[in-house]
Image (cartoon, rainbow, N blue to C red; front, top):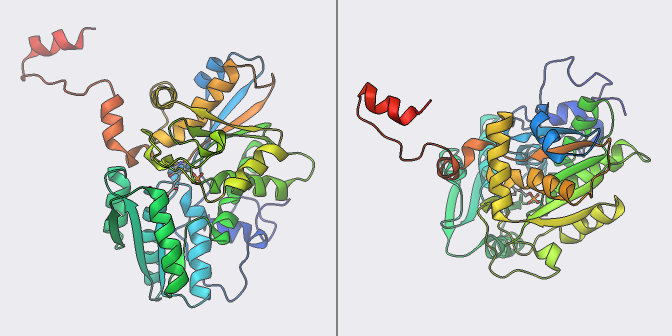
Length: 366
Ligand code: AN7
């Protein structure tokens, strides 16, 4: 594969988003209006501490920082394609169910469509009380009509599916194949940034669109050289691992609090075809990894993203990772998305003092 539609390398021209860079690999044509916020081209950062923690000879662990996307999550890669295609198809409204990030992204790209002169409304159904503050605030201020439903994500998604079957509005959940097409570009970028295909790709699994997209991307990038895909569900929301729909999913990682994933079969297929697996990580393991990523690597992510690193650490401990492997963990969302969990898990909640040197020195406890 040569990078970029015109054979230009990923980093040698001004970055104008994933459609501009990977045009020939995406379902766009000259009539597709490109709605972009210049998403993609996110950092791939070596993680020395996590590499060491795995305690397997010759390992190199990298973090793909998808929180650096315009709305702070990987969803932007899919949304630029989905919204561009919706406009090409003369749609004037988009809708999604969301645990938060899809809604933030949809709302932003709808606003960007309006900036380009198109009429585009955005409607969002989210589970009331289970969306991290940053995400909810994004969807609202970008101008979406946000309805908080007294139910979970799976119920919101069924409702949205029914709505799009009856009303003139485009679904932008990952059931929309254009979302998967856009998200597969994360795989292309990793191969270009590393200069090779990684041996292992660790990724959180919620609605299972992203693991599906990455696998598609790797398959398109190289036929005979593909990573082992290892996906991780939260143990309280693990329908794929438990092989049954979870009626009441629960996890601190609200982004992946999903009991009936839309791309279930495709996720199982990605694990199987790549000789990988899908496993669970507990909330404790997720929060432990969340703290390590921030405090020992200096990189931010939201709790659901930490499932990839938690899963890698679990797999390394169980000796399920081969020596000399190059591993990429996808950090799917920005740390600022979920300030409540960050404050909760940080080291300073509730530390207060009078403006008194002695009192402060006592607390500092050098
Ligand atoms: C940070 O926004 O499902 O397995 O509605 O926000 O492709 O669903 C978010 C999912 C991982 C799981 N990490 O990805 C939504 C939504 C973060 C996420 C996932 C999500 P998929």
